[in-house]
Length: 332
Image (cartoon, rainbow, N blue to C red):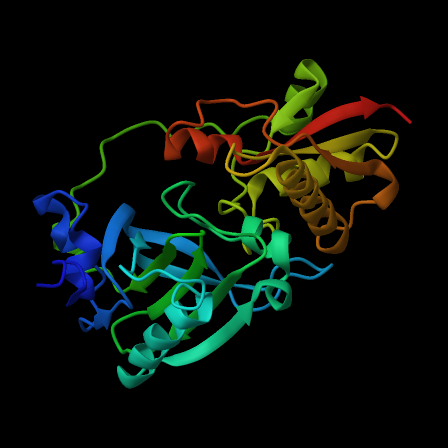
């Protein structure tokens, strides 16, 4: 009899590692059945009922990683595949990915982007992608494949990505699924909204507060910036911290600052230093190109994971460590 996880509904596979009460968090998309090319064991899984995810949709280049920002329910699961007659041929990344791709196409998905190792961008693509940590999701930097696909949907996103790699004795698959929230929040009417308490109007913070903090403390964390794990590009959006920093620098042309990028501890030291520099450079470019700050007032560098603000043992801690700080360097 084949192992229980060899052929099972995708939603069931995604929920195996979760508590029964969390089954309702699965994306509200039509269930898909996938068959793995061998016995598959779930190694790790995570989910969120509603989040933003940066989906790679092109190869990594000098300009960074092309991404598409998707909002919806998120589930990510990794499997270890161990064919009983494991050989280099049976464990090739193409042998693993091809049947999965064919099944997705048969289910109505269309491929957005597909690549292999060097064509993906190699080392940089892998570390710019949001992956479950080793050893649950092992990625051989010399042999991996990636695929992103989408299916038409009316209620929200129906997007899947696959990362496939292998070791000498096992294959590894990570599947990320993004779908519409299973239980969207009810729309409130005027009658549903409780009256606001009678309170005095809030006092606006004094002008120049950001600059006062920067000059008092010497450094300020730009807390509202958004970087996904492994992503070097600043996510699209308006950030109050950047508007405040730009206003300060435009009002003080004699001041200069350094942007210092930080990462979580997923990946090698050299990869994280490179990623932290990319994050700082991305913020610098936004300040110059979109907010009109002089390039001579801003430098950018990164220190990887060497200055954490929180423990890297939890996702919450890792999220706090993915940040950019502004440091006042001189009064030029």
